[in-house]
Amino acid sequence: MLDLFLAYSLIKAVLAGALLLLVGDIDQLPSVGPGQILADLINSGRVPVVRLTQVFRQAQQSAIISAAHQINRGQYPTIEPISDNPMSDCIWHGGGHQPEHGVQAICELISDLIPRLGFNPATDVQVLCPMTRGVVGTRNLNTVLQQLINPPSPDKVEINRGGMILRVGDRVIQQMNDYQREVFNGDLGIITDIDTVEQEVIVQYGERTVIYDYADLNEITLAWSVTIHKSQGSEYPVIVLPIYMQHYMMLTRNLFYTGLTRAKKLVIVVGAKKAISLAVRSTDDQKRYTRLKQRLL
Image 1: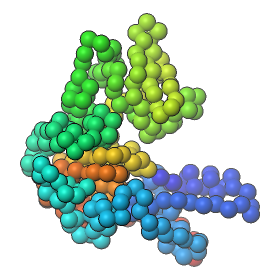
Image 2 (image 1 turned 90 degrees about the vertical axis):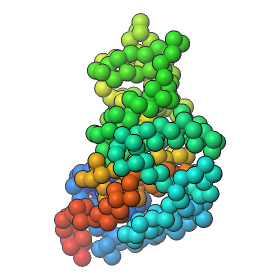
Image 3 (image 1 turned 45 degrees about the vertical axis):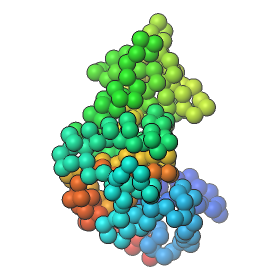
Image 4 (image 1 turned 30 degrees about the vertical axis):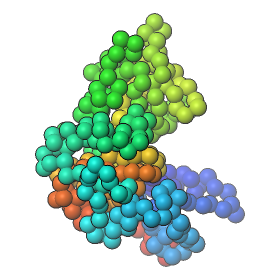
């Protein structure tokens, strides 16, 4: 996620004679900001490059790895059709042609198949979407999944902030860098308590507890479903990946590859073959004109 401006500030701050090591994957999504620093540096041939070939996130024989390589080659990935007893860690659920059917399919997977395979929907499963908008976007799915995975209960305190319900037990994501609280954009946590008297929400991020005043709750949002962009750099035991034509503007090869490879143990792709095929074929829109490579030659 190193864009042109951040790279400039970084390199300017590095002392002469120091060693700078950049680690990344040029097949994933480019930075949100301008530039394609890592790709330009590699393609220039002017810097030493080491390519890692041993897989650690998944097993070497993982179908996720095979599918990821096929996607990068522009081939339609070999994904096992869904069944009651799947044989691989990479599964496809047609989910119907309409996004509404996809929402229903995701709910059925989280309620039935995924628990039967030994995973806990509340802690192991992450739904990744191409966009926030739409029926299979993160906004709608967060509302649906909250009701499914963490429904209201008399013993769970909840508050409504700007139309969004936050409830004890909810998974949330930090949306901006907060250096005072030491939580950063993309951090995932669980709401462990809501103090309606002190007007505070307590979130557990790993081993750290962070307290938010009600006035600062714009920094977090529900994270039962997050965008693929937000997930970059993260990993989860189980990924559910809806791919529908509703998000056709965002369906690209590197987005599909990035979402698929976030899974450690299981990925379930939900969507029509037409949308998956479009994602695999689409590469033209991601071309960036930077001239950094030419300046290095």
